[in-house]
Image (cartoon, rainbow, N blue to C red; front, side, top):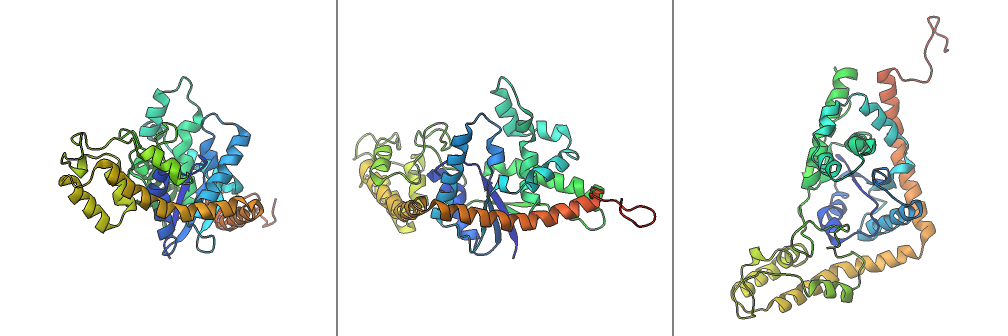
Length: 338
């Protein structure tokens, strides 16, 4: 089976942007790929954080992933810091990655431009990301559009290492992106991408009532000032895209017809969407509640995932050390070990 790797930062509870943009796709892919899904808590510490909060967010993210349908019997779900080979390989890759490649990364330039003090971890973030992927020799990485440049760097890193240390038979694959079907989810403000830091999200575990309170005031097509005004679904920045994500094709067609023909008001359209969101999320919320009530089971699942991931990671690191002459022991001219 082809092997995939993808990671997600422990931001706590998933929101529907994470779910539609990444996790729902992972759930589908786990059946056809050897899959490694990682909660990347080392990436999360490139910004200020509180240790207890990081622990809580890591557990909450694990629960949300499992409740969304990631099945430890079909994929490996684990926490990055449980596999120390991630940071070992990242250091090795730092030694073969030109500084200019890192300084050209769009996300680094954007975040550095908004920071009074730039930490080295922010610059080296994509090197660790390359190590995450290549540690498992993944040939495919399901990503959003905003991560494509980082994945390009992973291919550069793989190429650099192969050229220097494995020129005759390239060891690391050059991973290719698999863009998620739902590539970008607008936030409830209709302006920016859905993001917890902006506060324009719907949480995956929010109650149906709480979700309705967020959906009800969301802006729609500005031409629809009254129910009798005809609209254009494509000009509805939030509700129409969410219908395409949560509603059946038949309902999406009905939305288009009723919007253009002024047969539905926007509130009616939102009520249909709300019902369809609830139909998909309530089973996830039920599973999350069951997992929250069994913390020992969650710990056991993550520990098992970490062990399975580390078994693969150790093989990769052993090969890399051997190829680079980093073995702990060296042979003397007589053949005895020093």
